[in-house]
Length: 506
Image (cartoon, rainbow, N blue to C red; front, top):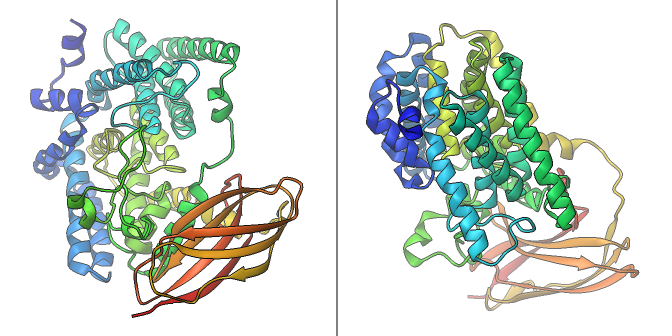
């Protein structure tokens, strides 16, 4: 009965079923290209906006090192986005996203079962899933909460998915999704204030408080992780992303092609879940690791499509957000603002995704079906979004006095080698006592990480280190040895860098 209520809407039946199974079966995402035919029903100004977005992605692609490949990959992503937008245009209401909650609940149940079966204490370890990361599970929880608070369905179902959403969000211990959930709820409440909404928020807050008290009583570290400011190694990813961008500052490296610059010289790695990251199967080697991302929406777009592509992308999403705000669409603004906030430390708008980027562009289509004009304020909104989301760039440019210091005393680094395997460097450092990360990078046009070595000096100030890793099997490359604080922050700058050239004997 509840399922029939959820799926009862004027939306085509196949779209409802597709949406209901999208989260657990996310390989169904490309079916959204069927929505392309609906773009012709959009307002002219929205069609013009999408046309300018397409051009902003295609033009930079033509000036990359691989123009044909970059043009095709940019077109692929654009078609996926426009297909989702087309489906949203035919919906005309954000509440038609509600069938997605069916699949999200299935994902939540699977994660709980997986965690229990694997033997981990449910309230003392992060949720695990056969093919989804804790971040993905956290975003599933956030979407459940938004649908419960601002969606339209049977009250029992909304309460159920709200409770499931809060539980999964907290047990995933993912900070990005938690930020997304809070921002989304706050934005939704700003445009819609009613007793029903306030009651829903009150109930979810009570549940969150209860789970928090239980977690604290158990003495686990889940909640401690949620309030940590450490970026969990993302500073190194951001640094590598900026290095990739600097190799092609006008055009970017191409859509879906950033992973080639982020993957280690040993080849691509494939995330398969809690068991680790094994080497890719042979048939995946040539794809260039498109699943490796910048973990920041602005840096991802900048590295892939340069300044023009970034501006076109953010004018599109800035316009969508403003339309949702002006139309007082509480669910729409919650989903849009929450997922945009999550792009501060993740990439939640890149399609295809497990479900969250699809939700964003479906809601974007709903908003574009209402768009009547393009104003200067849309460009201003785009500028604000770029400045906020590109925080690693301006944070790194702000002068600050580091609490730790590093100085190279001695280094033995071979400049000519017979093999790229097990390249070994011996170094001695004068360090302020504390914890550090020693990072070795291999650089051609851009730099990629080959080794990250944690170091705890204890009470010592002079540390002797051996760094050993496989570097690129090329005639000549530059090697960098860098020192970073152990606690990853927002700045991408190392404490110090030593660089030299290595040649491979023929």
